[in-house]
Image 1: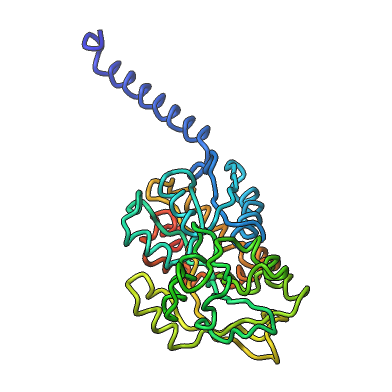
Image 2: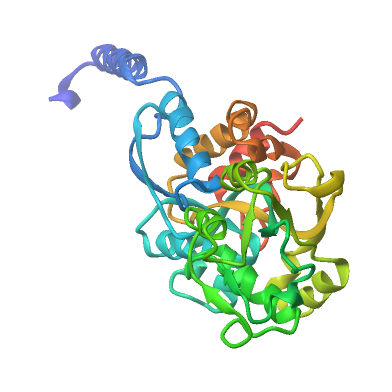
Length: 332
């Protein structure tokens, strides 16, 4: 039929078709939402033990996300700490979490299930290792813990990983030379107060509320971990190179005696997800983590130390593509 039309008629039909196509394209453009679609769906964020920094940080971050990503529903899930957090994300039980860099390195080194899926979103703040005793305790160094009852953190925690390593660096076997009590920061302070522990290890941001509250109830002291001990610890293996010498400032707790600072070691915390996580979601998640620093930091002091200039360094994890997109968007 089209072939039977005159040349002039065919031109008119083609022009009309082109005009209709233009109108349809324009209508579709007008009806389509502007820019990329907002992330939506449900995610699980694995946090930490009640009263710990991870748990408080996660609860406040969820409030921020409710405003920044209103179409995303976030469920918080308490955990024993870094090691369990990583296992949950790697297995798909959780979508995002926080874990210490040494725990991440050990998870990768052990080639535990799903290790190759893990990706970084941001380097957050440093955890400081804190060995807490009563002020009158004879413990002056880690080696003085021999034969004592010591809280070492739950089995799935980053605290347990560090406590075992610190004890070994001081020449103590956790299974033989001390009575290692596997409890978390939600239990250790009260156990020390009640005489059920002689000391406990904690690794967290400064100040940790549970330790601060304990220092307001009883007189406590932080035991120093000097540079030689940290060097012995770093020499123990590849995943221990993420530790560095640090000091706990004298105003961190009322526990610091005579205004003295306390030598210790520190390790970075990382925001972790998986390679399969949606890039738009990860970009928005990372933006909220960075932008919420001051707001969350007013209630969880360590969050004030999140820094855009260093957040991109998530080693030993590869940076997720969505996080990389965010950092490129804010690059000066």
